[in-house]
Amino acid sequence: MTLADQIVWLFILAIPIACISWTVTHEEIFREPHEWCVRHSKNDRHILSRKFFYLFTCEYCFSHYVTIAFLIICDYKLLLNDWRGYILAGFSLVFMANAYMSLFALLRQAIKKEKVEIEKIESETDSDDSKK
Image 1 (cartoon, rainbow, N blue to C red):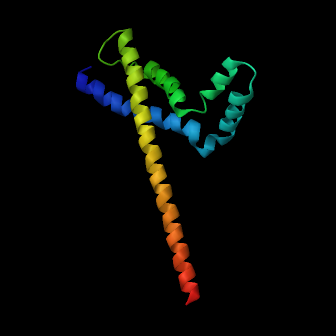
Image 2 (tube, rainbow, N blue to C red; image 1 turned 60 degrees about the horizontal axis):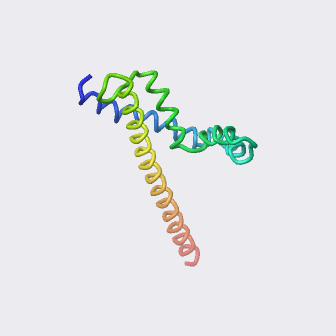
Image 3 (cartoon, rainbow, N blue to C red; image 1 turned 30 degrees about the horizontal axis):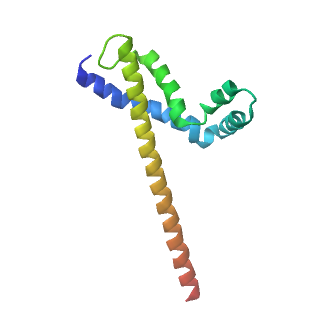
């Protein structure tokens, strides 16, 4: 695989990693398992158990495990064709996936802020109209 192909794979492969990591750790569809894992990560007696459950509550931590799965499935290596290529690919994919998730979080925050501002303006407009 050429270097250009490897870079394209890096940017593309990080997208589903980010998507899976974010969905499992933040979205409503996984709320109950997420809350269950949060409880266990805070209250279990053994540190290994707490750390195991914590990995399902942190998108950064979880993205490492999703990346490992994708490396196995896709056999993606970066720069080197041996085990070192897997290590470089793994950390590079985690970095890119987390950059994507950070951008997504900022975008969601900006959208939420705009919605609140619009609702405020609409409520002010409605109250002004009712006074007339």
